[in-house]
Length: 460
Image 1: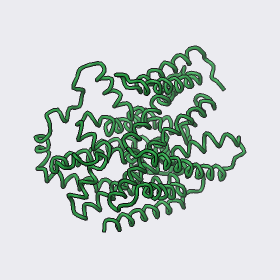
Image 2: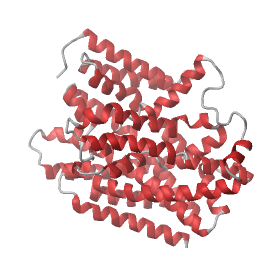
Image 3: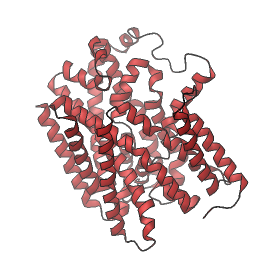
Image 4: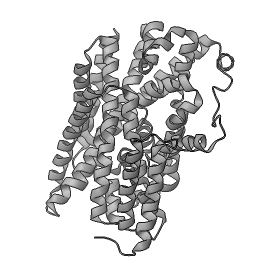
């Protein structure tokens, strides 16, 4: 019965995505849904940006092992990111009537900066897409004994189909549909497990005294810098990410874009805590879970210790979360590839119909790269870690400086991107007490300042 439900759910998702494709007439429809989405749809999409394999299967195992300090990056950093977008970024960027972050870099700096930013942005999604495909394949393997490689291909084909035909329209509608399932599934499972434990007071009693500590245990510079790095990896680093930006720009008005960011931040801070509580309750009730694969802690809990009804609700929610994240992660780099790397090769002569075709073909290419990487690596946490820091060290400083520092120019932006990425890459290969992304962020700031100060002319 569970397998039948999963098949039905996947077919429903395909149908919803196909239905959404009827609204796609232009490249703007494909990329940002023609800027026609209401608050609840945009907020659902922003919430679904990261609520996937990392939150349900990655963060939950980190929480059980390391307590609250182990999950500062996600969900707390992710909620911070959405809040900051609402406060400082949604309004000024929405006014520009653009499609991608790289479009902004072209307007604010130069075409050269547009091209370089696209080069840095696109690869940051490959590992993220692969992580979602790996998670989907693992779920199919656990509940239906589908071989891992075959599962990756099946899941990729499903996401590819509805993203290819409907673009942001499909992503937006399926995100809304899937968010409802996520909330219902996670809440019902959490309520049941908390009741079995005996309530939240019993959870506090049965966990170590410092398990819910929110600040570093050691009052040292290294520990506080590491703590800061956990907050800003997603909290700052995902602000200049195309998938977040694309969903924000699909709003029907500037006011809706801002309100959606605030609402999604609240949603993430509350709903994303549910898998953490579920995993903790599971390990309290069933000590054998700690011996299981950490990536599969919650799925194994549901399969071994719940009835068929709960299994249907949970796996529907889990598949919803991962599919939502994966579809947006594929569409984002495909849009940048088509809009900022391929379109300029045609000059001003390219038709909108041709651009739409290029974006759809880009979706296929990005998906194939994600499939190849997922078949090469199968550790979700490792894959997510590889994709999380690049935008922080390369794109965050040029974005913020461009919006809020009048002296920022193209040379500063280029130096910021290249120095930030270079220094971060260097420290990735050499052990250091300070996280490599912090060194990369500092180098990015220095590059922007030096490049903007030594010249007042913008590179063309």
